[in-house]
Amino acid sequence: MTQTPIDVAIVGGGIMGASLAWELARRGTGRVALFERGAIASGSSGRTGALLRRHYSNESEAMLAQTGWETYAHWPEIVGGDPVHTPSGLIATVDTGPGREANAEKLRANVAMQNRVGIPSRVVDRDELRKLQPFAQWDDVALAAYEPDSGYVDAVAATRSMAQAARRAGAAIQEGMPVLGVTVEGDRVSGVRTAEGVVPAATIVVAAGPWANRALAGSGVTLPIETLRVQIAILHRPLELEEPHFVYLDTVAGIFCRPYGPGRTLIGVSGGDQHDPVDPDVYLEQNDPGYGALAIAAIARRIPAMRGAVQIGGHAGLYDMSPDAHPLIGSMGPEGLFVMTGFSGAGFKKGPAVGRAMAELLLDGAPSFVDLAPFRPDRVFAPDYDPRTPWSATEYDLGSDFGHGL
Image (cartoon, rainbow, N blue to C red):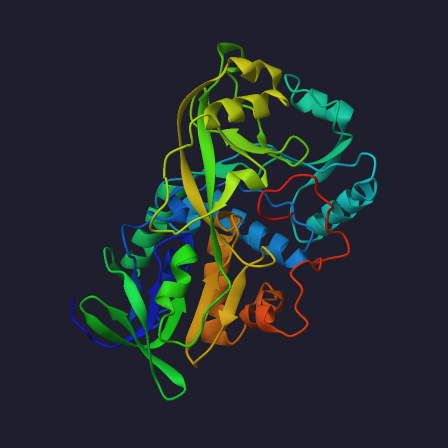
């Protein structure tokens, strides 16, 4: 690889980095190069459930999720290539039972906010849930949010397609090229360090998820990112459930799930005991013994016929957790250094939007469609920072732990 100076170096070949590379290249932003330690989508983006849930209790993340959905849903027209989105209804549940009655009004307020930013969500009660998904048991859910067209994405196909679009637009994609750190001259960045030497770069954007701090070595910046190992199982549904169910972000039952090809379901189980801190380079990528049985029991509480499901696959992926489980997006440290990380297991749906927002920040001074101020990375170092502080007055009190809130 030559060491020709580049204008923007992007570290990380997941959906965030690939989206930024495409947005910059298609706007003619000089020399843009993306550096990926392995293959495109071989990190967290290749192991995500890729549910396009747009249900959020703060407007900034709802806007990112909605903008991301718009790109996924119209992929051939916007990005090019084959479709990556499978439209499907999505149901998001929150506990409104004893002690959490306030969640009911919060749900209504959040759906109203989502409607204002263009998300076609609505509140449904137990009777309508039974009509929408008659094979499911809804006795423990009084109200839920229903998104009729959210669905899910083939995460690997989308990330690789985005990288190919970036390459067609003129970006250089360097696979098998880990960034070992950042070089600094004076008060600004000067390049990225690789095994083949330093590549001069005027601007560096680190979108390396769990590996962010390794890429930031030498910059003087260390982010409070914790890497969690989170498992999913692939289940073969019994024949009586031949028709696919909706996507569920079911905080009452403590599961998230979606269809995964004909007759199959992808499921993850909530709970701190399922979220293990790990070294991102040394962790068990397979399911724990017994995880399949745990997943089947969990989903059967919502869909009783799934007691007859059989595990046919599964794996563990990684969450890059920020202290408050919200993203870190923006400038940090020396001039010319930017980060997009800390998505805490809820990033893929926002990837195209975050790439666009960062491109507009770099080229125009600020995004045109979303306020990135809540995501500023330096918030986590403020003297009065408390990661437990709600991001809105309508943030839910949840009874299950997915590593992030809604």
